[in-house]
Image 1 (tube, rainbow, N blue to C red):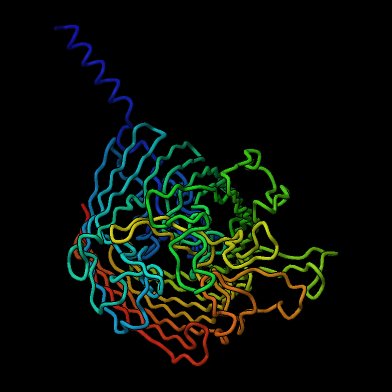
Image 2: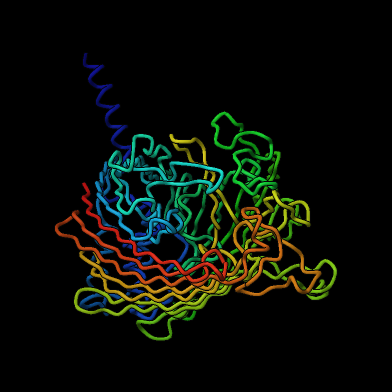
Length: 594
């Protein structure tokens, strides 16, 4: 008996020692929409420092090192409150296991149930809407380890499919009033979302480094309307990343995997133009029994520096989109130190390069810019009008951010301009003459999801800038926030979008007339999603969005929030004879966390 008791005591001692003591683990991963990161950003700008790392998400260890740069002797009022908020959150005690629960009830109302009936038509889309229940498990199984998983109860992204419209949903616009509550009409039992978890991963790290593997949302860059290499609109990445950082330098290596396009192409029947459920292998896309084949992988490395007494920040990103129809992966390309462009594997990969610069000339103001290069001609290579010439594919962004303390909060604002070339993110695949049904080797990625109503779906988005190619965007934001208590903001967006989209077929510009500029007013090539694009599209669409939103913490962990967005679109569908359309979209919600 004594031996048994002694064995139990020793076993318990070993188990307890395997878990961290409260307050000793700083490997927690904070998501891209973290208020802690936003508070640190506000502190940096208000003190005239370059932006903290714009490569999210971040570990607690990294955020604490960011916080160490703040001059605490200059804090008062709103800056002091922001610092205390971030410091308190980052120094919370950790336990071996922590369960969390957030219950949210949201209602959505809009006025145009004819023209705004798709999830993409909503400013507050699926990624921004909260589930009814969010059940979280955090684990700290050791000093250097962290695990996270969130199981949600809510409604699905899509609940229907037809050959006329493709994927559809009765919960995004066909009715004036809907909610996020399952089984409340028009939602039915089949609408329950079983694609969870959307955020689940394991992480480990130490002083100055972190590694994370699993399902996670990502964002790379300082943009307010979006970012050029990785935008925050992608619901999740199946990814692995390794990050190292010091006081003035950060390096990130990332791999992210998506379904191979052969599983869901062609999008439409090349004869009728109707959406098709049959993929290029002649099998049903929506059936769970259809084998999945092929490989599509994004791989990138990103380097960030702060210079000149932390006044200037610079980031350089290089990546490739790698595709293989037969699942072949050349392991030699997985070197984080190589120049990916110099692999010379154009048949399998499409490379991309991005540079970012931000500068805080004075306190309270930060200037920033982004440049992305997808395709360009080197000296000596064919120019437009010459045989074999390739279209340039660039993206440009400039902006200014401001943070100003007032009372116990912060005023915040931004003004931003962005332009993307007509063929940015697009490219041919193995054949330089891209034909209808050929998905190309693009920076357009799909999420594979399931609906009880109709089966498997593949929904495509640009992985980089949310508005994709052929767009000019002006975006302005102004607001006030008291971290942990309340916020209010207004946003204005005006966009001119040309005729090119995620399904536009790439073409060379040996014929100089094909060398079009943004925004295009004619579509001279084919389109994988619209057979009539070359004849019907004859104008740039013009979208204006005015939005107001705010939130308030009634008591700790009990929040209410509202959002109103008015949308006006001229030349919808890029057709000049289409009458303008508009919609007023309202969201109201209440949320309680344990």
